[in-house]
Length: 218
Image (cartoon, rainbow, N blue to C red; front, side, top):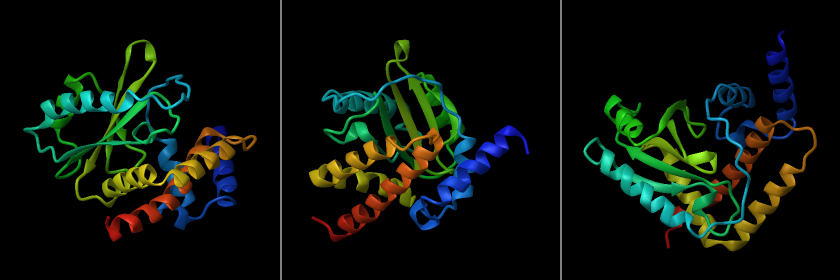
């Protein structure tokens, strides 16, 4: 067993003691570790900062650019997701956008349109292996935009929106989530992959409650 395979086996073994398949949305620990270990993303050194009230308008400006490029290419919706969409959560200065299209995979014209806006393609998104993600890094690497091209009918697209809206609606849920994230970050000797997967399990537990809340309606 080479060093890389040994490290993955070690991570899988440690994670099995912390999370279950049910907590990971149906993927086994092995499947998620191996999938995420193959993800491609730019190497950036962006620190977490306090919530920036400019993030919503930053999203709106980028949404306008993307809408202009994709409006004739099957665009269904553009949603602000991730921590920058949930005031007042701290976050890295990375604005995530869920761009919904009728079908996957992302078409060549859609890909070319995003590349024309300055994005770079990085293959499958961590949200779902059928989604694609694209990054656009700001000058001097101080921030970034991430487009996740999603299937409009995918449950994951709805889950992302329900999670965001639930966290916006219930301050106590935001506070609990942030406290658990801070606690998780203090676990000694864990890799970034371990941290990310346990955080996903935490987010999916909240998403279950968010989906039930959304189903009940206002």
